[in-house]
Image (tube, rainbow, N blue to C red; front, top):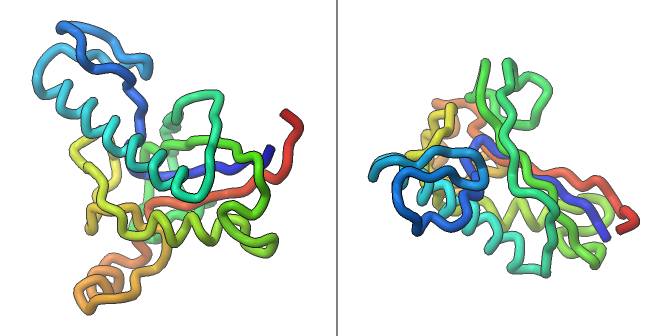
Length: 171
């Protein structure tokens, strides 16, 4: 097995089945008690489903636990863009593949993930603490349309998602 991780400022909480009667608690621990909290939970599930679909375009993945969130007092030592300073909530998701090279070559084992996730739309009405100038997964410095370049230049680095490869593991 090969271990990968996604690190993001996008709320990718997995709330599980939301078709239950109010009030109830999701597997992630969120209290759903009205239409508003249900809408937030659905948007979180949408981001989680989008992430899974993007990951599974190239191969099957397995995981042992749902994404977990961490309250970060400072994003200084992370690969998020300079636009995001100070305290923020981050989400992390560990997943595994059986094959090597699914998401990139030996030199950069996550290069295909960076391309696959780049500028894919997200739901932002969740419990994100970061403001997203572009409501997408941003995995690399903006290139492309003049509007994207202007937003990138004005905002500084707006990378809100990055990946890491932990290598082969015995499972």
